[in-house]
Structures are given as structure tokens and as C-alpha cells.
Image 1 (tube, one colour):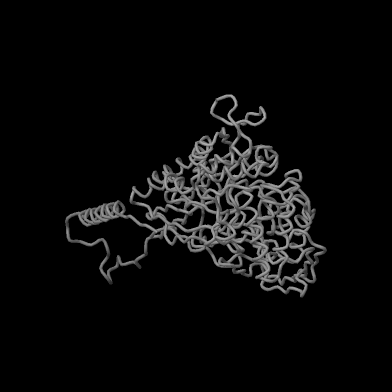
Image 2 (image 1 turned 90 degrees about the vertical axis):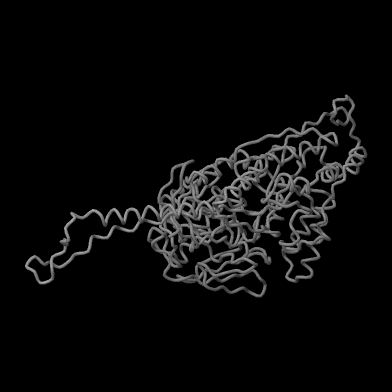
Length: 563
């Protein structure tokens, strides 16, 4: 973390001088006589001195830039409609991610697991209420489980399918999962879809699949105000069972542009910018706020990765040699040093072997930059420039590859895409960049898969690698039965063997097979591992602490205003 406070010191000095001047003026404001305005003790005019009425303390609030709308009117706990961060602030689950692989009690204070690993009995925290004052109990849990369990929309989760679930009493719930996997408890820490909303916030109270109205959870925060595409205001939940936050209000201001977020911080419109899932700081923005010298800068390594994947339906990429050529043609080291200063480091394999479990430099070595090797593989694949336009074709087919990106959430993707475009042009592949907004990107990424190439970000923290493997490589109903990245039966078989394995050594062996195949067959192109950065105005904010992961990016309990 770097801190520069030169300009702040000047500001404080000026404020102190103004205060001293005001005090002197107050002292000179008497009539010039030596008489006091306070009656002498014992005089007939003596009255009990009354203290001036104290002004109510100003409410403590902080404004934070958010790259996208909060989608509060559709922030159903059993959906994927809004920012991960907001889900976690409003809703809670059985358990929570404590970082470093720790699972912490949340709405369940304890749990029992059967010998076969399929039956989980959760003992619920007593005395908990939703933010509307209604009770959280076993009935509320069952209401929520009916809304997301056994729904194929959530098939990427190993915990989504249950043979049965029931309330044993008011504070005990038992779930018999269809699969026994090592990741069940971890998945139950996720921001969505396995958190609990109040049944009262679904239209026609008690109707499980009724129309969602408004987010009401048991979490530390609740919605006070929401203006679509402008602001989202959260205030403390008055019924919260846990620690009370220091702040009275958190204001999220919607600013899609990375450059505009930097300007908003400099102007005082917002007090905090940054975070992988709130509103990233670009490399250029990082340089600007660092040179300003008045903001506190924070950074932390991250478990996620950014990569480019191929359309499996594009005949060109069905040839492994073309996919390998693309990997060899991109110089990640140069890209990181020139475009990602302060915000990213060059990727080797899909995940960073230093931070992600089961990933090693042996099973995920990546591809060192080798332009000649890339050209050789392209030639082996039968691609030629038959018409002399500088770009390759095959059997009379010209390729103009559509690379889909979005820059609202990931502003650095604009420059990275241009770098990729230039790199692939060196081996004769023509790439056209298609920049779309967040909603269109999500539709393409998750449902239509309408691209030749697309930039994507892996999950993070407790999601990797297990849940990411199913999200990326298994066939999903939302994608019309296609895999989001690439489908291969052998790969999927080994993913599930790893997930079902109870022996660590055996599990590592299966993950070695999984990551080895992803690497050797170049099923995607790793690009970079992000560094999470924050810029904070210390004149407004105090006690800023980075949270346990991207989904809980800030310690919202300790965050406070400066004295």
C-alpha cells in the first residue's frame, strides 16, 4: 500500500489557520467594557446556566463508485441478476467464506455430515430476523430451497441437486444431496443463488415461485433508496444479529466508465474507487491517482484470471494446432508490462499456481511466446494467404474473427483486445473487436455464445478451481446444452472424478489430468492475473480494509469516516 498526503497536510494547515482566526474574532466581539454577560453568583439575576442545545451528529456516510446498475428490482436471492457484492451485503446463507479455505458459521451455527457425505443437518441461528422484522427459521429456509434446488439453471453447482430437504424442527434443516462432493459447504458460501430472502418479499406471501418484489435479507445492510442507473443507497439492517457497522449509510454511485470513475474520485464526487467487481481502476487511472499524491492506494493479489476462449463451433478452432498457434503468438509478458501496470501480471496457465489449489507449474505451464512456432503450426493446419490480402484462409474460406469484449466492468480489455488483434495479425489471423455493454455481453457469454473469440474472467476465491471447472467445461442448459468454454467427454469425466474424490492425493491426480488437458490442447488462451487495486480519499474515509475476497471486497463493518 502506498500513501501520499502532501496535499492533505496543506489542507489541514489551512483549516487550522481558519479555526484560529475565527476564535480571535469571537474574542474581539465584546462591547469593550469589562462586564461579563454571565450574572455574578448570588445576584438576583442569577439563573441556572443552560448548555446550548447540541446539534445532532452528522450521519456517517461514504460514497463508492459502482460500474453497473444494482438491479435491485430484480435482485432475487435465487438468481444471477445483480452485482455479487450487493448480494452478499443484503443476503446471508448457512455458512460464509472466511478466506484461506475457512468455512465460518453464518445462519447455521453448526452442521452434521453423514458418513456417506450426502446428508447435511444444519442447526440454525436462533433469534434472527429479516430486515422487515419477519422471522428467519426453518420454514423460511425450506421456502428458499424450493426456489433454487433441483433447478437446472444452477447445474454448474454440485450442491444444486437434492434427493430431499425438510425442516426437522423450527431451527433444524436436513438436506440429502444427490452427489457427495468435497465442495458442497464451499458452494454454500457463494453470493448467489443459495442465500435466503424473506418469503414476505415474494408477491403473494408463501407462494414459492411468486413474483419477486424487493430484496429483503438477514444481512448487515438493507436498501434505503434505489434510482436505476444512478444510485443505490444501503443502510444498516436494524434487526441484524451480528456486529453493527460503523457507517450509517453507503452510497453506490453508478459510473460505467473507468476514466469517469477516476475523475469522480478527484472531484470528490465519490470517496472510493476500485475492486475487481465494483469498479476497476485502469492502468492509466492507477498512474493518475498515484501521481496525485493525495489518495491512499491499496492492492492485493487475486485468485481469478482473465483469458480468451474460442468458439467450439468455429471449424477453424476445432484444429488443436490453430489453438496452440494463438497461444504461442501472444506475448503475455510484454502485454502486462506495457498495458497492465499496477493492475495485472502475465498469466502462464489458466490459474496462478501460487494462489489456486491443485494448480502447479507442471500441470499448467502455459505457452512461452514463440512467433515462429505459431507460424509453423498455422502452416501445418493448412492455412494460406491465397488472395494476398495479408490474412489467411482455408479451402476458399476467409476468416474475420469476431472478438467480443465489454469495458464497463473490465476497462483494460479495450487495450488488451487491440494487443491481441495486432498479435494475431502477425500470424495472418484477422480479428475484429466487438465491444458491447454489460447486459449484451452477459447474454453472449452465458446464452447465445455468439462469438469466435471472447474475453472472460474466471470465478474467484472459494469458486476455484472446482466450481469453475463445471461452469466452464460442462454442458449447461442456459447455453442450449453447450459448454461455456469447451466440451470434451474425457475432460468432464476427470472433473467429476476430482470433485467426488475424498482422498487429497487422488484428487490432485485427477486435477493434474484436467489442467494438463486444458493446457496441452490449448482449450483457451490465458492472458493475465489481475491485481485488485483501490484508491481511497483519506480526508473522508478511515479504517479501510480489503475484504476476504472479490465478493466481500471491503470490511463493511469497520469502514468509517475520517475524524
